[in-house]
Length: 229
Ligand code: E4P
Image (cartoon, rainbow, N blue to C red; front, side, top):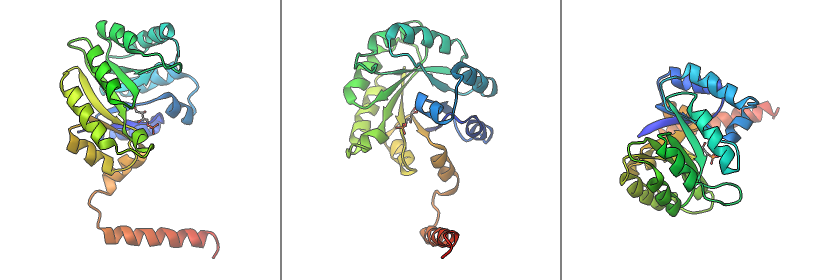
């Protein structure tokens, strides 16, 4: 499985890149807001100057398809390693599939995002033009947030993406380290991870549980001391 870094904090992105730990990057408007980015295109250019050789996804930000198309073409022109993120629908619930077909026919690499259902994956994989490279981002963590087990859904998404060489399945909205192993086991192509999960990937795998228990009481003890007890 390929590990991508999910986030829009330039220093975190560069740390992951320089450590050679990830194979690509994803960003989204909420992550940009959280990172305090005010100049979207300026940020994208800055990132691409420093990370010119790994896939990076930047999302369109309009809600109407005409403007989305213009933004998609602009974002695509920023670099060969760019995947243009298109949400599967706009805020009115109108499908982005016609736009996805149009952009893909022009050879633009897309990352179709905010996907939560199997029919959305089915429509998406059939919208890609032959010979293009694309990512299908299924938000497994947001499925889990509704109390549903994402694994049976993801299993069906793997089968659908396996039908199309143009579509790489990405496990989005990872929530915990175990998701990396679950995704790998199911045959998912990519998982995008938060900085917290990336740091656990480096330090926590296989850590003796006795040690984790000791770490836990040590943290409790430090915190209670900080409270002055
Ligand atoms: C993926 O590309 C998204 O940026 C991300 O994984 C969304 O995660 P969230 O559900 O935690 O917002």
